[in-house]
Image 1: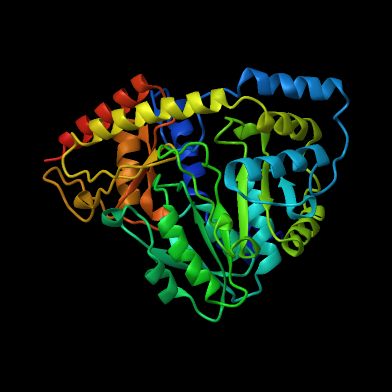
Image 2: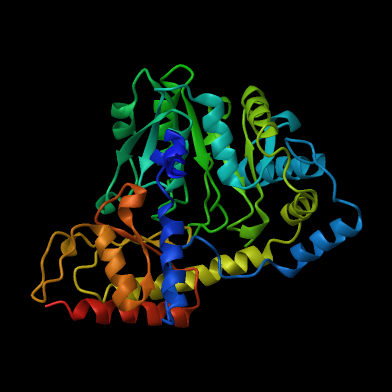
Length: 403
C-alpha cells in the first residue's frame, strides 16, 4: 500500500511554521488572480529598483569573467570592501578571516544558529522580532525565549528585562535595530545597558541584525559590537537587500570572531557553498561607490512614514507608533480583537483581523502574532504615496462598516 507523501515528511518540517509574511503575500496573489485589485503591504521589499550603477557593476563583472565558483566565505574583493564599510560606518575593525558572505542575511543567521546551538540551548529573542528568527532557532534545536516590549515602550526591551530572561542555558541574544517589524531604533545608551548584561555572563554572545542600517531616520546608527569590550561577543549581520534595493540578489554578510566565522563557513560549505560571483563583485563596488541613491531612498521612505502615520491616526482605535527606521509601521489594533460587532463580525485574534482586511478591503498586511506581538499588525510602507493613501483609505472604509 502506498503511503501519503505527507506522512513521510520529517517532524522537523512538519513542525515548522510557514513564514507569515510569505503566506500573506501568497494569499494576496491568489486573490489578485481572482480578478481583485489587491494592494499588498505585507512584504519587506523596497519598491525601488536596484540603482543603475550597481546593475552596471554586475554587467561589468560578467564581462570580466566573474562566473565561476567562489570561496565559501566570499570573494576577497568583497570581504575587503566589507571590512572597509564596517570601519567607515560602524567603527568596527575586522580582518579577512572574520568576514563571511552568504546568500542573504537570512543564511547568515541560519549559519550562526546551526554553529552555536545544541538541542535545548536557549536564545533570548528581543520581541517583536523578525518572523524567521524563531523558526531558524527551532530548526537548529534551540529554544527561543521571548523578551517582549509593547508600544508604550516603543517596542524596545530594557536591559533589566533581558537580564531577568537570561539563564545558564542562554547561548546568545538576537535583535534587529532598526527593527523589523516595528521600525524602532535602539540608542547608544540603551545598547550600552544591554551590552553590560551580555558582558556579565561568561561566553554569552549577541547577534545584531543591522540589515536596515541605511534606513535610519535618526541619522545615528549604533552597532553594539563597537561598544567597549563587545567586539568579541558580537556577531554583526548585514546585507544588501534593503539599503541598496537588492532583494533578489541574495547577498548578505556577517562580521564575527574568527572562530565563529570559521564555523559558519564550515556549515555554509556543506549547504550552498559561496554566493554567486558577479553579484559579489557588484556588491563590493556598491559598498565603495556613491551612496547618494541609498540616501535618496531613505528620504523617500521618511516622507512616506509621515504620510502613513497621519492617515492611520484617522482610523478609530488604531494606536500608532512612530518608527525611527526601516519601512514598517506597527499599529496596535487590540481594541478590535475579541470583539463582536453588530453585524456579527468577530475578530478572535489579529490573524482574523488581517484576513478581514485582505478579503474585505483588499489590502494585505501581516498579523503581529507572527512577530511575537499579538494585537498588532505590520504594514510595509515600501509603496508609492498614492498606493499608501488608497490602502489606508480602504482600511478605514472597511472598518467603518463594522457596527
